[in-house]
Length: 184
Image (cartoon, rainbow, N blue to C red):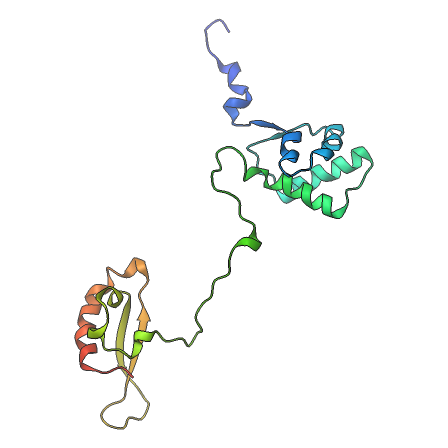
């Protein structure tokens, strides 16, 4: 325009953040370049490199390709093509965190519900100070019959990391009590 504004140039793909990627490059990453001819015939020569396609969008691309070419991909091939299209966003520019398959995530083992820490039976003064900050030990009256004296139940619970600083005041008062009473 005459006034020197560049409003018209802001509609380019660089300004909108859509970097186009060739379907051939996308498929060749997974060794599927032989199927490029079908996507080209269906009109899918390029894909938006920054797009995060949903499951249904990928299904639509595969369905359109099969319909336009009059073919039907074998189930194993269809799964490989689906993954190549669906997961391309994870490998795109600006995504430095690699995509991890759910099957590759190792399982975690949690303790049983009735699990007691090893230091439950130890006196608080005998426990390492760093470990002392990680739990709270409380004693409360119990309804259970006692052999001698009042029945007392000792509760030993972990302190979440975000509350460890706040628990120190409570802990210091419980430390003196814990040193007087044996845990059993």
